[in-house]
Amino acid sequence: MSTHIFKTLSSVDERPWGSFTDLADADGVWHVKILCIKSGERISLQRHFLRDEHWVVLEGEVDVMLDEEAYHLKKGEHIFVPRETRHRIYAITDATIGEISVGNVDENDIERFEDDYGRI
Image 1: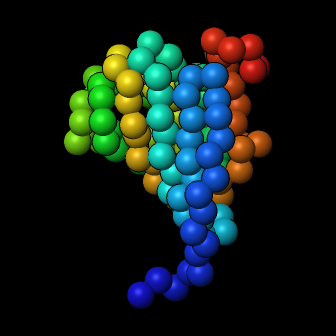
Image 2: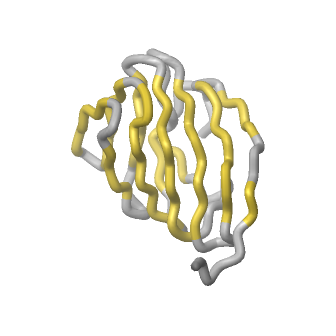
């Protein structure tokens, strides 16, 4: 039984690279979302100070950058993204990523280093 009260969400947020859907949140303790990234698109090179993330590839194929390391992930594979790690996902095919964050999820807690869509 969870010791934290959480709320179920279903908000969809469109982005130039695709979209994400927030599924559940426990007020700064954890958060679950689904990222849908279009083939050939990528999220900004960024980092967070308030949360760790764990990504699971639910569909598709992606390349992931964590600081200076590159990883190729396929359906069913996963990777842990510690807070303060510079990270980016590039979708080789249309991709669906499950993201579980531990810590405070705040869209203002994004430091962008590079962005294909001018959001720095």
